[in-house]
Length: 116
Image (tube, rainbow, N blue to C red; front, side, top):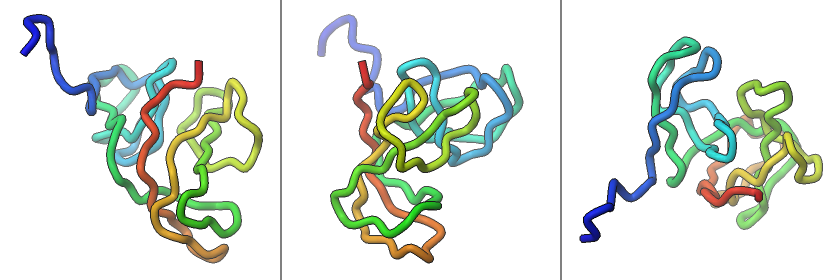
């Protein structure tokens, strides 16, 4: 093991920028993922950058392999978006289980890479 190895980077420590609910889609600069626990602004937390999660779905049907995009407008908690990738809309995950239009959630695997 390299002497400068810290950890695998799957879960990273962060400080909440605002009130956060466990399981929320969050972004801290170029770090994005799922909040580990609920907390107030300024609380220590962790962000899961990798993994398989069930997340809210608000727009249309999604097929296996579709890109799941999230908007972080006004530094708020993330919400699903169908808009083009931009400063506030990022690629967040890949759909792993088809979801119908009426479904409230969808299953995704996170995409930990940054949009640089």
